Image 1 (tube, one colour):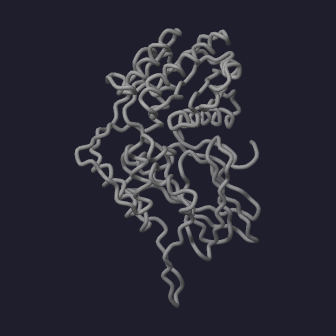
Image 2 (cartoon, rainbow, N blue to C red; image 1 turned 180 degrees about the horizontal axis):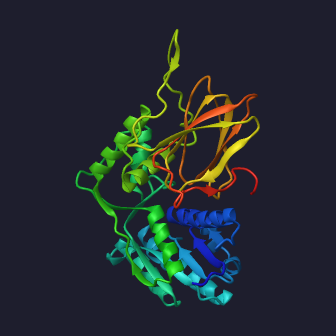
Image 3 (cartoon, helix red, strand yellow; image 1 turned 45 degrees about the horizontal axis):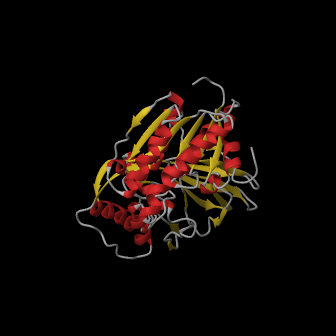
Length: 379
């Protein structure tokens, strides 16, 4: 596609893959704005309510170059489920006609579309309707996991995490297997299809993982993280899975007071353990000054105030809720930054603030995974 701003409509933006896609498009806009360049995407997000009004849906689609279609129904009585996704697809097609646009549609399909089940027929039926519009990409997805997934819906990873955090014993199928793809990978595949003009079928390959093995990995995260120890974060899959686990600990699981070893000489505490490497750095911040106001897609990051007083603020990207954590060096308690959440730290004390930062990887100026986005206000 050319270099003009591309209008992209994301349906199902309140769902798992839709949210990840919207955040990744927003991240590219943030990066361009930081450089003083034109934002590449005119982003429009629609949740399920966006399909309640035909006129409003058509208005949202006006001038659209692309639609990342993630809206759909995954669970319902069989007779409802079989018709639900084709009906949503038809409403989208009709709205495109009303808006007089022929966008590139990328559809989040499923490996189950090949099965003779109500859900399989529902997904394949929707694909057939959307394929008739014109430019079409059929994104065939296996089991998706990611930050913000709904437990007890259709996501075994999120369900296991929720049960582990609650101290419950899950009923794990010893023979169960899942083919796991992170929601960010699926979302990026959809975005890349639009940017590169890729049509036809795309099928990201997931990692085949026995459910008992998945449960063991998540349990190991929990056991070590509870004791202030990071997992070995040397491969991308583990980082993605660990980010899903730790994001589920917010907002109520933080800050986490550290064990202080105090005697006549002073105090010693362990700031960071494990992780397989990473980068540690310190900063001083003057009173009234705020650092941060950015977010990450994959980076694991820890803030630990060792001198002074601060407020750490965290907001879900494209969300409104702001969480505040008051921390001070007299009682060291780290706050880890969840991925897909913009964050900042403000010195609210009377003297200099000394903060230790740790990330699981070395900073790469060519791929910083850091996107300027204010927690409060606007740039």
